[in-house]
Amino acid sequence: MKTVWVNTPLRDDHRRWLEEAAAGRCRLVCSAEPCPEAEALIGALPVEDLGTLPQLQWFHLVWAGVDKYPAAQMPAGVAFTNGSGAYGAYIAEHMMACILSLYRQLPHYAALQRQHIWDNCWQEGTLEGKTVLILGPGGSGPSTAGWWACAAAPGLCRTSTRSSGLRRWISCCPRPTWWPACCRAPGRRRACWTAGGSFL
Image (cartoon, rainbow, N blue to C red; front, side, top):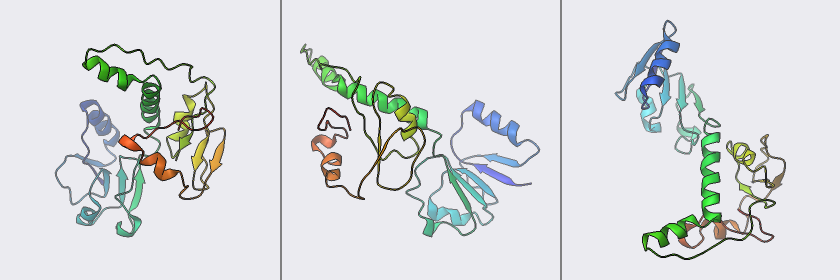
């Protein structure tokens, strides 16, 4: 019977669900403590520590990002999967909240409120009809685009990868000239208005 090690924190209901699913199928170990006999790992572990699991056959990373796991450092013969796409709805809602907050200047109002100052900073117009450019859509881009039924939501991608859910794609060079200005704007702002009333 295979040994599956889950080292990510679990809620009680998640733990019970996993235990019921694993019953009679595999030996489930839910613990932050090392499990050197594990043949499957669900959770996260520094890439340099994967070598301490000599029987490891499958590593499922619960995150979507795999930056810390370069292919050259992964143990040979280990299947590697991740949580890409599992968080699309959460990220879409978060992005919607952030964009609406910036558009309606809520951070500015919050700062004034702390100072007991009333100042009308009304933003004229609505997002209806605006273009929302999804920069580097990845796996969450289509979910985010789905929230923008009132606006056109093209995806800007520097690779040939295409995901469903986006009506239009725009290809660009690997490092467009405007990229540094957008990503390193004063105050580390990650969103900006572009020509034509579009929101990036």
